[in-house]
Amino acid sequence: MPIVKTSKLITIERHITEEGAMHPDATGEFSHLLRDFTLAMRILARDVRRAGLNDVLGQTDGTNIHGERVKRLDIHANDVIFRAMDHGGHLCVMASEEADGMIAIPDEYRKGKYVLVFDPLDGSSNIDVNVTIGTIFSIYKRVDPSLNTPGTLEDCLQHGWKQVAAGYAMYGSSTQLVYSSGNGVDVFTFDPTIGEFLLTYEKIRIPKRGKIYSVNSGNAHKWPQGVRDYVTHLLKPSDDGIRPYSLRYVGTMVADIHRTLHYGGIFMYPGDTSMPDGKLRLVYEVNPMAFLIEQAGGRASDGVKRVLDIKPTSLHQHIPCFMGSEEDVLEVEEFLRAASSE
Ligand code: P6P
Image (cartoon, rainbow, N blue to C red; front, side):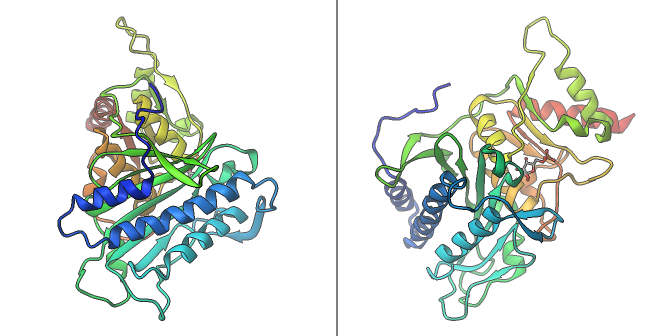
């Protein structure tokens, strides 16, 4: 699978502008919003690249709402995104993994019709050992776009199918920005010599079935029976050679999803006896990734329901997730159904 699939020299700004022109009611506001966000991604790409040198590694004394020790780069990334996005006049409210409640747009700035929710630095546990980390984001229109007042919690808790765009930045061997505004999934690779994100892969299509499963097997003793039965099935050699599957697990959702988009297979974070709703957060981790997976032709569920059809009830709520190649996700759902009917 090539990781470069276009020779056209197109920057993300030009791509956003051209896609914006496809929407007759486009005012350019959405393009300006994405332009501002790519500035934050450029800055974070630089800072992550130099993390070992410019003293942003290490932990703060604090923990976030999830009880997780907060890395200094988490705080820095949250601050960079806030400062890039708070004054553009395109947003009415923001929400972040690193903020307990909603993030208000300062009084002095115009309130726009969009909502931004994000995980500023996904994969924090990997920061200090130079393993791929990322930023996940999702953009909605506010519930009542005619308003110019501060956004509300309801604006942040919309169904995932209402996302107007979603994506992630992946700070790995190169920095890539993967996003969709509902017209397929495109990949842009950052060229630091010119400070531009260039289009390197157009309209990713996830294989209908893969040969990789991605899950933290250290939790296996706590999984529901259906998940255990499914993984046992994946590891049993089949006559057609499709099984056994290989296990690949980075422990950064952005990296595991990026591989799944390109190679297919399934990424799972099931609920278990200690975390009945799993570890991943619906609003700013699972929903944006589910949007991308579906835009690439895959499937994303909580094991029963389509993720994008689930109404969020709180900013930081967890949700079990099974996402990737359509046939693989349908198969785990069948194992879960069979186990629950026993
Ligand atoms: P575990 C990173 O901390 C994260 O939020 C996701 O990026 C990742 O998929 C998951 O947690 C890893 O969790 O329990 O396997 O270490």
